[in-house]
Image (cartoon, rainbow, N blue to C red):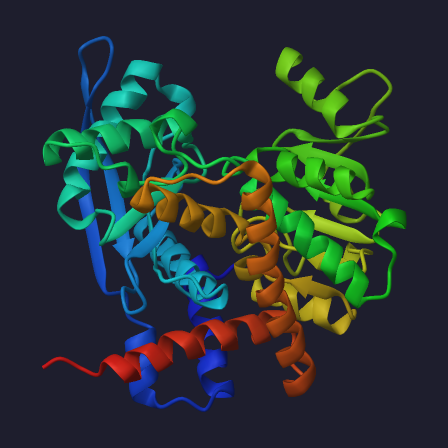
Length: 410
């Protein structure tokens, strides 16, 4: 299986070729602007000191400060971080946000950390990347394994060193520290909006549509909630241990999950993650980690539409199979852009010290994402390309155009 970085570079190469950009453009677009690897020491609660690797990649700053999440996961490495920062660059450009792309994280399993250890690790990581982050430089946000609590610690660490409060240094913060209403559910809301629009493009009434969601975390859960509000029927969800069908509502299942730590609510039937991918549904939403839809799993997919809630959930081989099967794939850089869109709203609110209500946040999210969806749909029809190719072409062209307008210094 190809690495996430190789997959991302393949997608970029195809977009560059389709746009008929020059080899100079390819050299500029395929090279990250800044890469930082740091050693992050942690004093454990028992007094022992352990060392962890931390990363921060600023892939592009051409269209504005770089933007991207901080991931705590044992499998994270530099190549994956570069790949995710690259995808963030095209995502921000596709949705016309004044940002470049970034990504960062620590190779650690957060489940092995106490709250105090997590705080010490987060603060030390922040201090190590301090020279290259800031509200006008690079704005971190939560990702896999991190949440608003980590963002509060990062914001505080940066502010203590600055000597005054700097809420705009991170997004995804608690509301009381300058966070935005709607940020917690934003990525899932965006996936739900993308699902609704994809169904309408395919001529399927959303209120009669069925959906299966792989993943029941921050993205999968809020996607399910958003879809149920729109009148769609979520028939199956899963986590790392497998999935279930037969539940009455997502809310009931979530309440059981919070109380018992599993999805085995009364009246539900178990299924594996592989079986969930093969369900006969209108929409399949991979909302867990990368590489869910591969050459092995793609042939069994029966859904008419795949909406990528996770980052890079489909390998190139899996993508080719879905294309041959006539499946409409809404790519990750479009489908899960709700998180960065509302992060942008949070950053704007922090900068002007004036905050919007929840309805205004959602309406602006819907409007911003709909513009991108319509542009992707239009280019897909005009150029006879897939939605993924269309989204990449739009995002890459905007970054390439910005490079040309700014010129090369010196």
